[in-house]
Image (cartoon, rainbow, N blue to C red):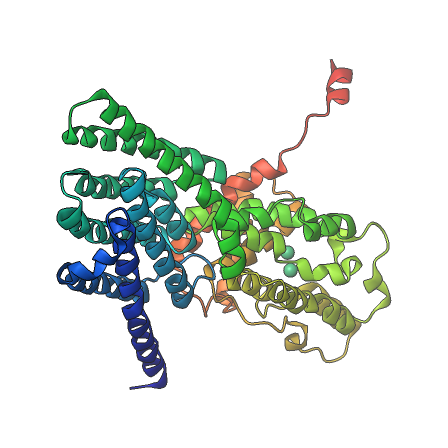
Length: 481
Ligand SMILES: [Fe+2]
Ligand SMILES: [Fe+2]
């Protein structure tokens, strides 16, 4: 067994051991909450129900642990350990609140929406669904025995029914999470689901007795419970994001806000680079969608890929307004000045704790390509010139995001410098960029298909004309009339 497998096994054993007291405590405190109304010491009297409930709870926790260790589609920067540290406390919290609500308020005023939203957004949508379903089953296990032995007749079928409502809520919440676009639409989607599922709760509460009070009571409490759960999610998500250092799509959207201090600084000190980054972002976002990647991540990579240029903005042509410092330098020095922006950007982003993909895009977006302008300048000056001395000194792309940024970066600069006359000319230019990079081995270390590259090409050809569209010269048009 190699050391990596040994470490994984060790971690699983530690997790499984830690889950044993956790399962015990969840069941114990749930029983206390449920029986608090009757007699808190009665917990010891139903050990015959407590022991199986505890064992089932532990088994449920273990299935969650196995599921998380096999999950591959985590949110950015979320790891297996972070997922466990979030999922289990949230499940425990949900079960306890469910019990408190069932005992003191209503079995329908449950926080399943909170559980699914929080774990779904922070860990992965599938994990959110799993946590929601597991919390529903775990709550039923904790609620049913005390009700059966100590509180019969008082709550009737409603406890089992509330688990059904929790299941339905969890499933609908998954659609809300998968269709999210911003915080606002996510919250409204969640409230709409809550209104719907509360209706099911209200109908089910009628099974306890057909009265109008039962119906509206069940509905109103269901709605209030879910709305409070959604508000709680909105309030605690930034706290979880901060402490876990997980990058949700909301956080990615936030760092792409143009009021971010670092982006504002870029717009003032390196306006050319800033505009270039905005255009690359527009292209990269569309390319990411075309090959099934996260558009938020692509946009973030694009906004920050040239952040290293801020150390010496005037050495880059897009920021020059007349004076070109390279006129006073030999090509070798110019190349050294230019190529360091990749490493500078990488280090800066690492310090700011950006996700790995964003840091890698800053480091790898030129790979080890040659800087042809200065190579040609050096050959014209004479002497022996080795192209290897004029290459970037960075790794070639290792993620699809780095590939997208590499291609969009060149296409944006080229088409801004020389506007293609026709769509065919544009297609030819983009095609040549991709073929040249492929031939130069820039995509050798990344798992990207020819089909992906074809989709990227077609997207760029479709998006660039919209970015380059010429404005109508109204004064001239008037004169002509
Ligand atoms: Fe660059
Ligand atoms: Fe760039």
